[in-house]
Image (cartoon, rainbow, N blue to C red; front, side):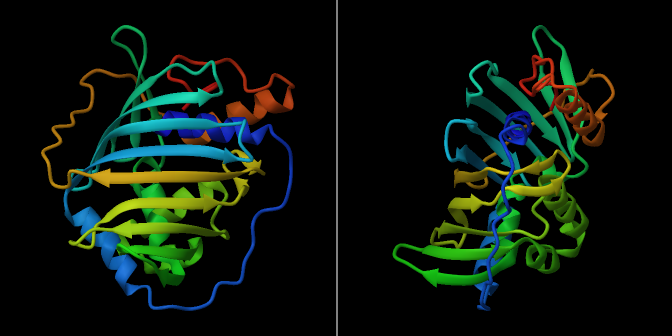
Length: 267
């Protein structure tokens, strides 16, 4: 999930330059959707399927599935990347803000994402803390407009800096996004479709293409049993990875040397 997302950022980073999406949202009562995020997290665990597609398509597309343990701040996932085509399937474990990507044999590449907000599904669900406009549809569906800055203001205090970091890394701290959210009878998020603008001045510079993320959640509260690897090397800070990627881009080397964990050159 995480490595493929970084790969997508690297891919989009080289695709061209255009403005970030803007908008003037109007106010609404967002308490119901904030409560839905909290009910989802309070369920403890959830199975998930997630897809990211660049917009326009043709630059990045990947699909992940796995389990997220909100209670213990851990996740395990397997990701298949369709674009770029040369990225191998990735198995990853997130423990807080640290992401372990399995390499051939028994090795692991370790990346420090800077917080659980960046390394987990909260990088997607966190947008719902920033709802500024919502229209109810059928079957528990809502059409929403969200502000990243409002999400940081409205999220629980312990998550605030981590969520701010996640938006800053993606270049979305001043962004407005739109989407659709579906909830179940227990007011838990079961489906979330986000239309995200390009990132501006993020960790990997300016990423101009938009992206569409679809997240489906199910099997809430089932045991997760996620355990980080016992033996792994030191974690590479995400900032160091970003410098490496940007240096390769400036040197005209494209995305840089691909690594076995699926992020070219890292992540």
